[in-house]
Every structure is written in C-alpha cells, then in structure tokens.
Image 1 (cartoon, helix red, strand yellow):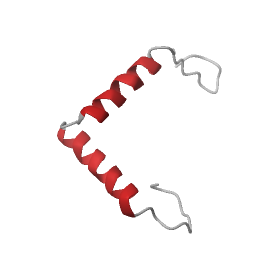
Image 2: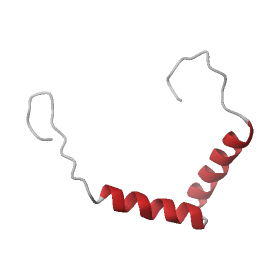
Image 3: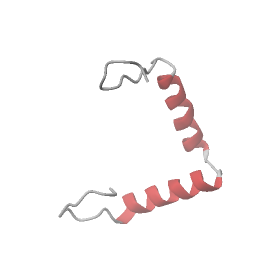
Length: 61
C-alpha cells in the first residue's frame, strides 16, 4: 500500500499478476465477463445504502 511502511514481503506470483492484469483491463476499459459481473454486483450492493458525511462539528458536509 502506498504510504505505509512495513517489513512484510510484497505480494508476487499469480496473485500479483492477476491484480496487474485487472488494473490494466480497467485502465483500458476492456473488462472481461468476470469484471463486468463484479461491477454489477457492486452497484447492487451500493444501491442498498445511503452515505451521509458528517464533519467534526456534527454538521452534514
């Protein structure tokens, strides 16, 4: 993660390759069927909630 100092070994192998591939597809707009299904699932979940941002002063932003 950016901005976090850690002594953990960075991810590699298939996991890292899958993440890089997914990022490239998103950046170019060439989503595969699994990516599109994930987007639709996320939209359905997010439609169930309403977010209100409240500042430290207790007023809605």
